[in-house]
Length: 190
Image 1 (spheres, rainbow, N blue to C red):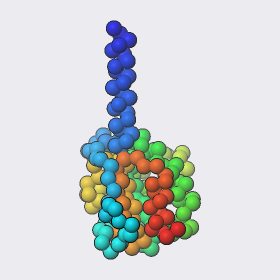
Image 2 (tube, rainbow, N blue to C red):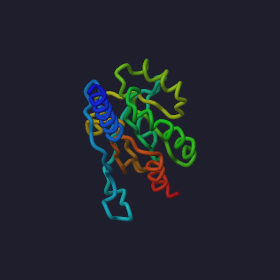
Image 3 (cartoon, helix red, strand yellow):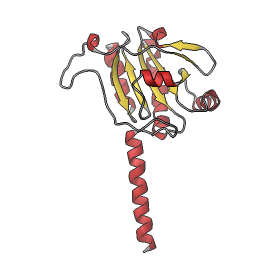
Image 4 (spheres, rainbow, N blue to C red):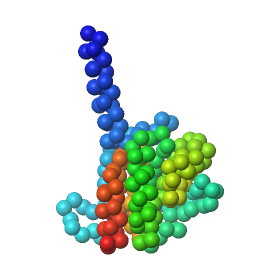
């Protein structure tokens, strides 16, 4: 009987972990879990009219060194804007993809930007970024940027922004490197 209950508990734990992996993390301190979604081109179309897309909200946020960054600073570049936290497993799994994408496309008109949502801010984010070798700006998120980007409900939430400053795609939950790579190539015409 003990083995039967133990096996059932392991199965339940496995299902819970799978749901967290596929759907993203719930913020322990206020961000609710959301579903995966993409915004941008209409389903079934082969061309994308960037003028029909929504403009990404500008922001002013400080990086881990105290330097201010605005989204407008990156106009004319494809930007991936990733809302994440150090405690979120799927967020951590995407970081190596983002490091590689920055290396691969950084000199071709692409910029990766992370917006950290850890409550501890710089004290939590800086050692984590150093340990992981993050090669792109990590900005310290605040309530305003979360609200401006639709009230981030689950993390990771990642926006792909065109060189014209339009939101091309929005993803909630873990995505593999090839998803972002395809979006970058599309927007850079590679």
